[in-house]
Structure formats: structure tokens, C-alpha cells
Image 1 (cartoon, rainbow, N blue to C red):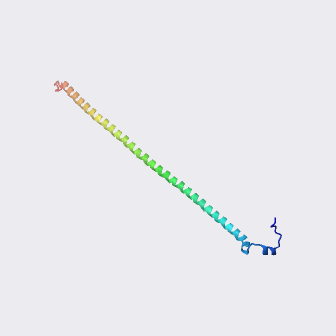
Image 2: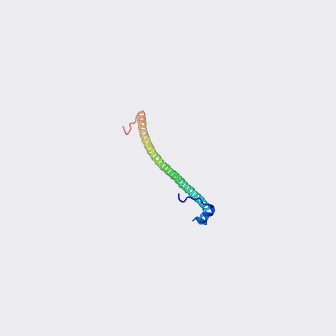
Image 3: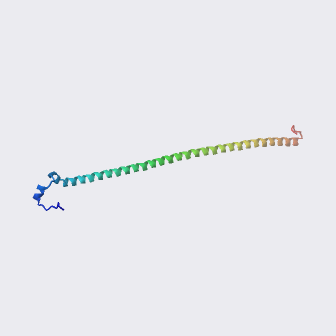
Length: 133
């Protein structure tokens, strides 16, 4: 402890190697430190807000992508439903056509059989022989 100072204020100024500008630097250093802390705090706050903005944008874009995928899926389901309804109606119309064709064929056969029966009955009542008999 050779540098132990027991000097009076008059000897400090005369024997000190610190200049006058360096001695007055404590207050400016504190002010600069405070400004640096405020600047770092502001930069940190802005960086956090930027990170939050990026995450929020990602979430919103994800929501938009999800909505887009859901809409596309609904359109695919609608197209598939239209296709199935069309196929079912085509099968139904084909079946109805076959039923109607069968009904007309049966009606013709029944009419032909009724005409033959009527001819045979009238020939039996009148006593005339039929051309088919």
C-alpha cells in the first residue's frame, strides 16, 4: 500500500495526474450510461415487437392457409357430391327407362292376348272359325 493517499485537497490538485476534463467526467459518464441503457432498452423493446409482429403474421398466414385449404376441400366435396348425384340420377333414369320399356312391352303383349281372346270368344259365340285357329 505504497499509494495510500493521506493528502489534503490542495496537494491532490497539484500532485494528481488526472486532468480537469477527466475529473469532471463522472456525471457525463453516468449520463452516457443512462443513455446507453435507454437505447438498449428501446432497441430490445423494438426487437421484441418485431418478433411479435413476425409471429402474429405467421399465425394469420397460417389461418388464411387453413381457410384456403378448407374452402378447397369443401369445393372438392361439392364436386364429388355433384358427380355422385349425377351418377345416381343416371342410374335411376336408366332403371325408369327399362321399367317403362318393360311396361310398354307387357301392355302390348296383354293387348295382343286380349285381342286374341276377344277374337276367339266372338268366334265361339258366333260360330265362325278364326284365321289363327
